[in-house]
Image (tube, rainbow over all chains, first blue to last red):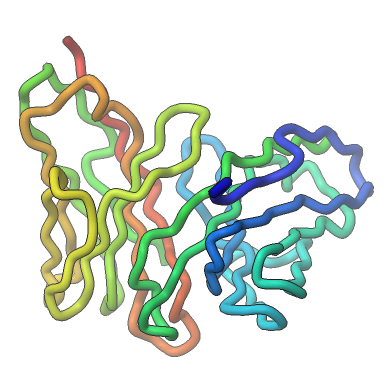
Length: 117
Length: 113
């Protein structure tokens, strides 16, 4: 198993550009999520999905879109990049035995380091 | 509202013990603990669920006081490999927040030889 993979590893954008961060998992997990991590801070949830076709907003969703057309893939789209979106982005996936609550570990991808100039 | 972790940083000698605390203002369903080394992704340590169930690595010890909405992570006989930043994440029992983890700002643990 490759686990959770993310591409690209590094990206530099100019203000106003758009791009998509890719995330894929091969563990057949229903739950997937995107976090951002700023220096000296914890992880903040951007968007999450509990299954194909189902997405919801997290703590800091503004400026980001997501879609979930398959169980495996959960891309994050930056609509119009801003310097405030400079951060490290982590994708994570999890199996949830209860179906409604997070009761199992999240597997994190290696992260994408994004700089917006 | 994010949980509050204490201490913010701790330095230990190999073999010493440490306790990291996590406190929330909300009623919790679960507390999750992760460790992150510099430049790497967070790695799962333990989940503590309302009702007493725990899932995690056998060498990790933690507690969850549901009434006080607090959790503590116990690191005993620390090893050099324990160094890193420890994060707690909480899932609160309130409308609209299920399946959302809110993470604290982390506790930086350094173990010296």
